Image (cartoon, rainbow, N blue to C red; front, side, top):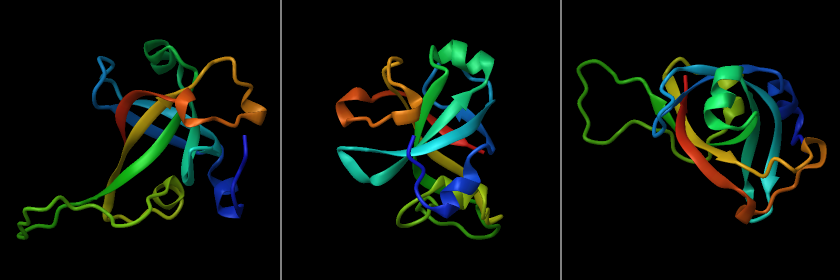
Length: 140
């Protein structure tokens, strides 16, 4: 597993709490961040390797999954109505959400990807065709 940058090293070992959106497993569960990698077909995107807790890993049939962040959701302000959903512009990273958490950000939406179980985690380099979507999820 390649770790990218000094800021990224601080995030390894952190615990995050997830909730699956489009999956029969509806309970909130924890996962520890085990590493950061990139996929060959998408060199500008970071993928985070998560080790799931026991009930979630049984439900998803994977002990390790990749998380790709997509949208940071902000807290809604009182007395302010807007037709647009409040989200962050530009690149989204799990480091910003976990380490430098701004209280205005409530959740991080993204996707969980599975990969072949035969891949060794210590030297994992994935191609885009090896990934498959397990579920959309939210980190709270």
